[in-house]
Image (cartoon, rainbow, N blue to C red; front, side):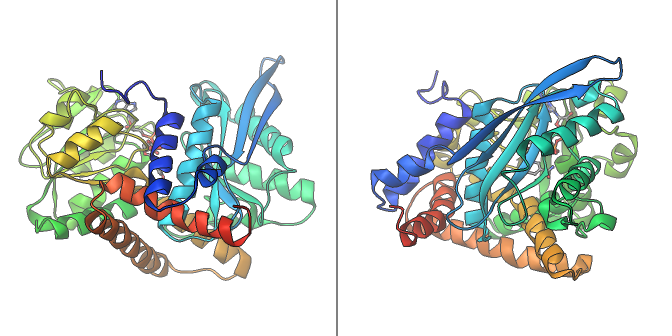
Length: 416
Ligand code: NAD
């Protein structure tokens, strides 16, 4: 087993943050400040269930650092949510905001629950209860929540409504990822996938591979993976493989993406309809130019990194590649676009949504896309330049870019 494989998501994030700060020449105190969220709230939320009984849920809200501005980040509903995961995700949000140069620090929330086993009414009561429990700590100029795994625009709408009732004024900038009629932004739902396509474009240019000749394999066919497959297919690339939790589909001549999108269910599953599917493990090792893990963490490890055939790996999922696998891929000359850069399209358009709410002036989808394009191309270039000039892997380069603004802000404020 590789030395770093035992680390949980928080420990491995801390390790890279520490390395990035050391490379940039900051003192140890800076790492002491950034290694954990500055504020971490644990709440207990009583919810009246449909059978009349009360169930008490545990939720968290982490605010990593507000040296740059208010904290920002999604709320995850999942049975496997842990305190350490929420902490790590809040650090990742700080890094993402630094990389794409937003005036925010990172935040994150989570509730231990399984939305697949809850009714609409139970979910509404849980969402409202969570807002009541954290309302003292959040707000449009303090900490701005958003959707994440298994939360959506309906849940954001309930949370917004609860917050507006508590505060007794309409406050659309309290939360992003809202339905358009409540102040949501055009382009928000597809923002992550759109961002990943922009990253793929940049990476292909660096490798001199024309998009129309590119073969792409995507692990995961949910919100991120399915929109990405559609966009890449429409742009003329060949999507040769996709997968869901049950297995993978492969066709070296390109899959019928329209058909698959039509048949997929709301949890991003489609492969059960087919026989002779491959496994998710096999998908990762297929011949292709671009591999996009867009499902879950720890998929590319020291065990399979040597067998990856793609020349570009773009991480749409959070944490799909271990530290050891990052080293192996980099040594093999594979261009890795790390999660904190590749999946930052969502937070950029969330920021646009907040700006529009603050101005009360709304943009067209074209305006959103052209601004997103500019922000992400600049972000890719900043990270790639650090990667080549400082001779560090792309993940460390992204962390160096991401942590710098926060560290400078902390220094100007006189904290360190
Ligand atoms: P989702 O729940 O909509 O879809 C997940 C997909 O992965 C589904 O197709 C599911 O079948 C598949 N999957 C689940 N478990 C799997 C397993 N064990 N092996 C293989 N496939 C599996 O989720 P999503 O919103 O598309 O998010 C996917 C990843 O992208 C996550 O890591 C998430 O944190 C990251 N991400 C998403 C967004 C976004 O805006 N959706 C933004 C940033 C990062």
